[in-house]
Structure formats: C-alpha cells, structure tokens
Image 1 (cartoon, rainbow, N blue to C red):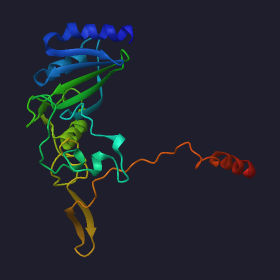
Image 2 (image 1 turned 120 degrees about the vertical axis):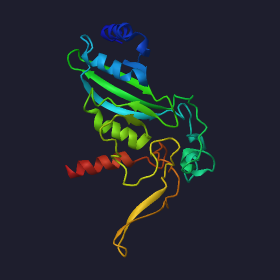
Image 3 (image 1 turned 180 degrees about the vertical axis):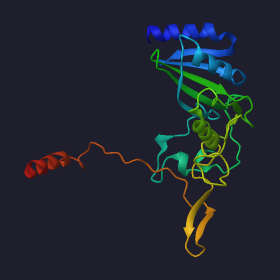
Image 4 (image 1 turned 90 degrees about the vertical axis):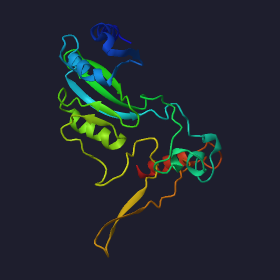
Length: 245
C-alpha cells in the first residue's frame, strides 16, 4: 500500500472522529464504515473538505451479508446431474422457496449494507463507504442523491434487487424487474430459479405468468483432461492451419 493511502486513512480518522465506525486499509483499498445516521454528514465532508474532495460517486451497490462466509459448493461431491448445491434436497439456496427462513450468519443490523465507491479527480484517490441498515426486517438508509446526483438510479437498483429503502429519494421505484414483481431477487433467501416465469400466449394475446418450470440444478462444467483420449488434437489443428496457409 502506498504512502498516500496511509496518509489519507490517517486524515480520515482525524476528520471523521466518532462519525466513523472504522477506517480500514486492506488489499490496496481504503474502506470507511459509518452508521446510517452519520452517512450524510460523512458524505458531505469527504466531498467538500480540502484534502479529500471525493466529488464523483462512481458506483453504489447493495449487499446481503446473511450468508457471508458460508460455503454451499461441495465440488468434491459432483454427480452427473450437477453439484450437490443444485441437485440434492436440503436448505441450500437452489431449493429455497420464497419466504423460507435462512439460518443467518449476520447479527441484527449487519445484514443489509449499501457500499459507495468514490473518486477524487483532484487527488487521484479512491474511497469506499459502507453503511449498514440498522433494521434487517425493514432496511432503511438515507439517500445521497442530494450530495451525488448519480446515486439516483444506483439507489433504485439496490432497492429493486435487495429491498433496501433509501429515505427521501425523489423517485424510488423498481428499475430492473418487471411490473408487479414480488420479492427482491438478489436477497439470499430468494430462490435461484425464481418463482414465476412469463411467456406470450398467442391465444390470449397477452403475456401470462406461470409457476417456474426450470429444474433447479447446476451443471457440472466440462473439463479437458490431459490423457490419451485427447492426444494428437493440437498437432492436428496445427497441421490444418499449415495446409490452409
């Protein structure tokens, strides 16, 4: 990590004080975690204060930490039908029905978060803000559209996919899913295959919704192995290329 990153981290610790829960520098990235009630003050400070001037919001995304650190993929038990996550019964995400409860690994108030990626053109530096919603059942975070206008559609996307509400947003509507869509597809308790599928019915002359008919499975990837069944393939390709030349 560079000296400029270290200096920025120290300057943020001093400037933010108690408003920052943590200031961490890891893997070459600087992350500041703040509470929802401090978000607007912190965002305004890092945008306007000389030495920071993070005037560009590059990206904003939602995160569901309910299954953070859990490994569902048992690739050493692959079958002809797919990995165990997709082909065996149980409580893996591939088999969940809408409304099923998850054995959450997150503590209360640490499930849903909004992550803000900021850029300072003046100082050529980047910063990441992370804000957790205090209530897992009704996640609410203040909108930053009054600070960075580019947050408008990003917050709508996080609302649509994760169900995170951004208070005082000027137009908080779904932006990716269909009209009347039920649920939030990026939540960990939403089934991977979804709940309904849509098609155009020529007899009714309209789009109809039906229960999903996709079989919940994950196909085993094809792996090319170095054995005698594949010997000679490469030279053959090379010979054909030389003949074409």
